[in-house]
Image (tube, rainbow, N blue to C red):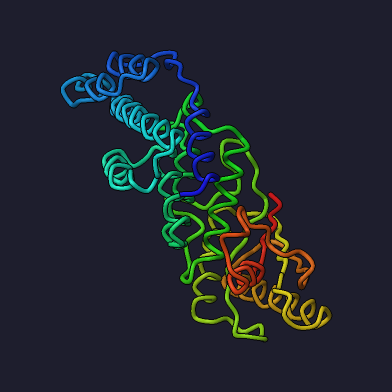
Length: 300
């Protein structure tokens, strides 16, 4: 694990304002107090089934998540002291399997898979982290990431979708969204694949186009702009023409599938290459793959 990954995981821990919820079941209060003083065993004890049996289902779930955050903080501190994040993968996965989150655990698993170039699973983890962070019932304000980190999770999920060899859905749990905890995310980069040099979908591209339609169907934006991008291979003029043709092919697919809003298309060609989080993590072929994308700009 590189220095950048160490910084990210520690930053995730810093985002936690370790304060007790305003009102909660006794087990949740005890777990929060244990979290504040760095008592992981105490947090686990408070989250035990016997301790939460008088709590509501939501408070019981929150108590288990607080215990998960105590484990996360221990791992984050260890990483900050130089431990390799990937050595904690099995423990992080066990916590994820037990409580379904929280977003910090999912984010850390995304970091591990991204470092291993397992882009499909990294995209899944980052998208799940984003959606978990937006769940205001299971991620109350005191547990939530700040606006900047919400945007970061979305950028990483988008980047990993573009890097993945197979399509990854734009939404993992429930309806597709363009806003998370009030943070508007107007643009989504979708890796619709096309046959080389043409505006014809590959089988994977068709699958991504279908996923985008389902996303728009649930989000119901009044208007969209489809912005086509290409890699720098070929002439500037040809790339601009090709990027527009690909955006228009996607627009016609969406309309034929049933999209009812208004739409426009733009071809940027090679003018705006994708800006990855860590360009040094990719070879030239992968950087070109990230460049080849269609961005969907929505207007509610």
